[in-house]
Amino acid sequence: MKEELKKNQIIVGSIMEFTLSENQEMLKKITREFAEEYLVPVAKESDEKQELDETAFQKMKEMNYFGICIPEEYGGAGLHNDTIGHCVIIEEIGRADAGWGLTMAVHNGLASYPIYKFGTDDQKKKFLPDLAKGNKVGAFCLTEPNAGSDAGGVQLTAEKDGEDFILNGTKIFATNGGIAKTLLVVAKTGEKDGKKQLTVFIVDGDTPGYSVGVKEDKLGVRASKTSELVFENVRVPKENILGELGEGFRLVMKILEYGRVTIAAQSVGLGQAALEASIKYANERVQFGRPIGRNQAIQWKLADMYCAVESGRFFTHKAAYMHDNQMDFGTVSSMAKLVASEAAMKAAHSAVQIHGGYGLMKDYPVERYFRDAKMGEIYEGTSEVQRMIIATQLLRKGV
Ligand SMILES: Cc1cc2nc3c(=O)[nH]c(=O)nc-3n(C[C@H](O)[C@H](O)[C@H](O)COP(=O)(O)OP(=O)(O)OC[C@H]3O[C@@H](n4cnc5c(N)ncnc54)[C@H](O)[C@@H]3O)c2cc1C
View: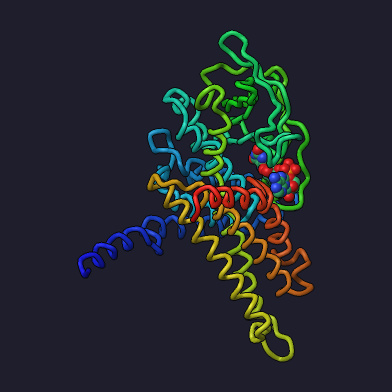
């Protein structure tokens, strides 16, 4: 029994890791310093202008943040097997500016990583170096006017023409749309046994026939670009098929599993920012002759915010850990996305309340956090869709 217990402790000890490694701590510190210097000071202006700050953009390139999860041989930072490290970076960027957090989560998690993970050697050599350097920004284009939560509803077509495919249709709500030059585009390539077949194509943003349509003016994460993308007879060589022809739906689900983890990390950063701002304000703001933080009504809010944000972080790191250890992490990635985004919303909601009237004014960042947080409950699969994924697994396999 003693021996069994010992063995169990070793197993448990090897799985339950609640601290960051030395390297991950270093990544956190460096990114925090970077974000404090280059993102925090311009976050308000970027939100107002709906623009990513140009200096920050150049610095992001220098820091190799565009190549977080790309192996070093392609010019990346080499965190393709350290998703917790990846999440730590996205969290810190998201803490400073959720718009930048979304931009980087999509570029890295939904565009670059899928090419590394599912691409051919030639595709990796062709596309990854420019993505890693930030010379080309990546986008993931699934959503269409009639295909939102129902990803299978894609209507953009890709028709075979000799050795190429011709793409026609419209994507909407694409993050990085307008600045992206390497696009993963989900297209309908036919039907088999009465079922729609989807395929993912890597499309170069300079291909004739491709254009950027409506640039959305949105509630939150305003520094990030969200655009309609139009494809009119866009010719794409068959070498640019990611994965297998007709296997796109399964591939999209796999891509989203990983993407959700980095998106969750962005929400954790945002929730953290709301919590920190609230602690500061609760200690500083005096009413009835004492700091408002001395009131239990405020303390309870802070405690609940902390618990929520920390839960989001735990799920995010757990999903990242499971991914890196080749475990089935799909359900936990949905749990991470759901818990982290709702935690950020809860934290931002309480942050505004704790700030009182000032919380509604532009002088304080919490009104921006509030607007940013709402977005996280919708993009990359709504909260309802995440609950659907989790519950489906529960009913199929149990706990
Ligand atoms: C800022 C931003 C960035 C985005 N970036 C990207 C991107 O980079 N790439 C991309 O492809 N897409 C992107 N999207 C699109 C996003 O993923 C979709 O908006 C989202 O998946 C929801 O789709 P929808 O907007 O069509 O809502 P709908 O699917 O129409 O849903 C409307 C409502 O109905 C609910 N609902 C739908 N079906 C069900 C169901 N079966 N059961 C219960 N409730 C249901 C939804 O949860 C939601 O509350 C982005 C969106 C935003 C706002």
